[in-house]
Length: 202
Image 1: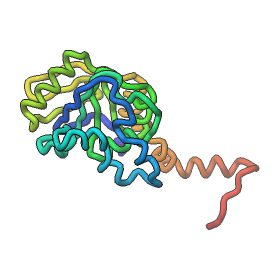
Image 2: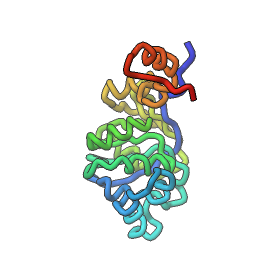
Image 3: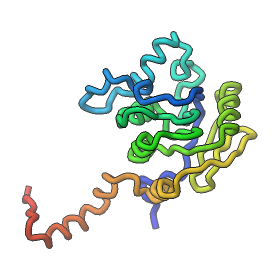
Image 4: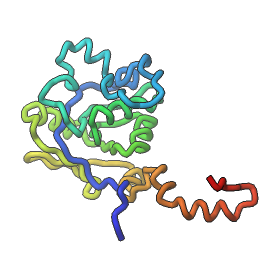
């Protein structure tokens, strides 16, 4: 059986460390950027206020972390308001997966909905990862959703993820729109049997 295009077995790439607990969604994407009609361009404004205050020293501005794919954070990441723009801005900057001590529940759900796995690890593992990335930014990391590990360099540690979320990534069922398109003919066939549904010939 062919692998569904929406399946996510692993995420690989260089890492970017973002140190600090309770980083909320207003810091991730300030409210003034929520007036956009689409999510296009949100990546340019991720952590806008923190980056302005950092004067080029914020990790998302530092040259050694550009084009990183895996964000490494601490506890309660994504807390605050439920804005879906927060994970969208992180993803559109270039991040494909996040490793952290813990995540706010709604932020986590919004990440699943766009196909960006968030896995958790112990505070010791997170500290080791952040230190390793700072010392060797070119280190390639891999989040393995099948083996439930994070690896890079000489480091290989266990990670956790809710089993339901893990199965959605492994099976490709996180992608609701993709499932609808993949089953378009079945949907039309079922709709054709319903007396209250009519299809336009256009």
